[in-house]
Image 1 (tube, one colour):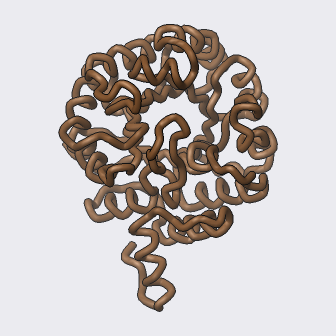
Image 2 (tube, rainbow, N blue to C red):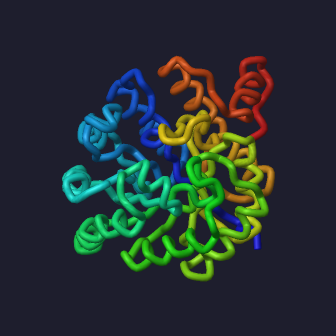
Length: 307
């Protein structure tokens, strides 16, 4: 059941950078996005249209979207929590808008101060507007494999939210391990259940690497036939509502895995390694990508990278 080809959704420019305390320049964000699309990423989560009060790092979303060099065939996504955000996304000519909910009631209350049902109801006008405008709609379900507040999240809770998001007309739905506690067994259980109520080919895996299980969980997801995965160049990211949660799985590590399995991604690993080095230097933090660091060291020693 392992697919021959997968799509990687690059979330570094938005999910990866949003928690950086020091403001990352608009020019750096634009260059990051452009280089990622040039490396072959088919879908780049570019920014979010949220209140600068809550996410100051994304205050330049409109300028970023206006400044990027759009590559044919690339989907540029933006996070839109409400109609004001959607209107900004529409004006910025986003190809896809992303809404978000949680599979955990406790996380929903802590994160956005409302129940799961209330949060999804808030997205109904956004979903309708997206459908009316012919804009792709994606939903992300946080804490699908565990919650920092309530602990274990029942599989039935994840399935319930998948069904609710599907009813809104979502084109893709992300099953997100927000705090990186998932295991291979649990990953397969959740994805197998979710695929019974939503097309498997439109489900995606979004894994954080807090416990070092992200690549393992991706392999487990592949065994369930999942064809879409999220990743963040250099392993950028984290979750402000989940203490100790590290960044998203590094895109370099995911592409290295897929290459080893003979699965097509369309991504140039050599270019990706350089991009990881670029953004790590730009924000003054070391890359969290194991493959990226190892292959970069080989390149600098004059040894060809295994791409």
